[in-house]
Length: 294
Image 1 (spheres, rainbow, N blue to C red):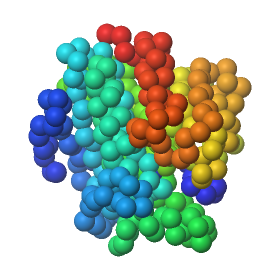
Image 2: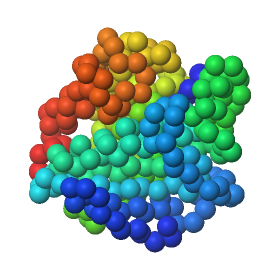
Image 3: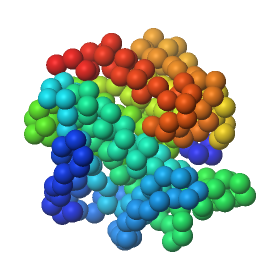
């Protein structure tokens, strides 16, 4: 596999700024299919390595709901998959912050915590060490956990579609987006969905992995939005270009934004460069596709 491959038994209600109602719900009623049966204490902490909040040791996937905050519900929804090398989730910059932005534009956003490789130490430090010194071990961990993460992505889309009426959304207006490893999950969903888990749109953002290059683009493939930076310091820019080519060669709708500068993991961070506005271009695209219209 290419390195960096294709990242509450009851609802908890709390209030956050701007009156966004967050509801965190379990993705599965019990032990997730395929394991692991063992649970690990889920952790959230500030990573000095990545300089952001991260979540680690996810063994029981959840969805956190961000409802529309502009007074108008477009009837569309998006599942958001944060990145983090399948060892952590960059929960703010690649999760909650993107959800708040889209909720302010009438979308219902669901931040997915998908299953990760268990780590006893700082997951972000471990990922950096493996990336620098032991790609074989990193690939082995990804090979083990990627199928579970993709299964969670598919289950998340199916869950939101099945329960769409509860949030006032349409089952055929539920898309998925993801960053980095979460972009790998998004790609897995884009190629592997069934009727009940078909996303209305897909948006892999600086996604990793080329395992899709031999897969067949689905006949009813949804439109795709892609964004990445040429100077991606993990060398993943070609993945986005190949994905765009696969979609357009199959005569499917796709839009690609390849920024000259931005590095890897720009997410919702502000760097005072054009990548600060990729999310605005995504909103433009959603508007064009009709997903921001009621």
